[in-house]
Image (tube, rainbow, N blue to C red; front, side, top):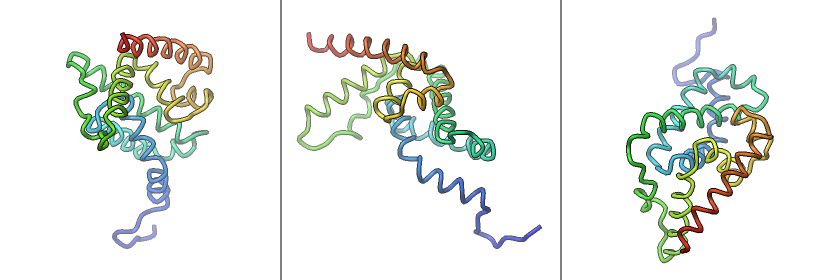
Length: 172
C-alpha cells in the first residue's frame, strides 16, 4: 500500500472534487427552485453531495453521473418537504437574497413565479425546474427523476396548466 503525504487527495477524491466544481452551481440553483429557500437549498445540496461521495464509485459508473446526483437532490428535497409539510411554507421569506436595486418589477415577477412553483406537487416542480430552468431534455429529466419520458411529458403538461392558472389569478 502506498503512503500518501498528508493533504494529497486520492484519484477518486480528486475526481469527486472536479465533479462537484462542475455541477455545484447548477445543483444549488435547482435546489433553490425546488424549495424556495437559499438556506434549505444549501442543506439539500450538502446532503446530496455527501451521499454522492459515500457512493462515489456507483455514481461514477452511472450512465449519467449528473442525473444520478440530481436524483439524489430531488429525493432529499422530497424528504425535506415531507418532514416540513406541517410548517407553513413562505417562499417569499428570503427575497432580499434575490433583490436587485431598482428592479422591483423583476423581483415581484420572480417572487410570483417562486410562489407559483411552490404550489406544484414535488414531482411537477422538479419536472418544471429541470426542463425549463435547468434546460434538460425530456430524456435527461426522466433519467434524473427515475421515470419514463411519457411521465415527464404528462407532469410537465399538468404543471404548466397549474402554473398558468396560479399566475393568472394574480392578474385579476
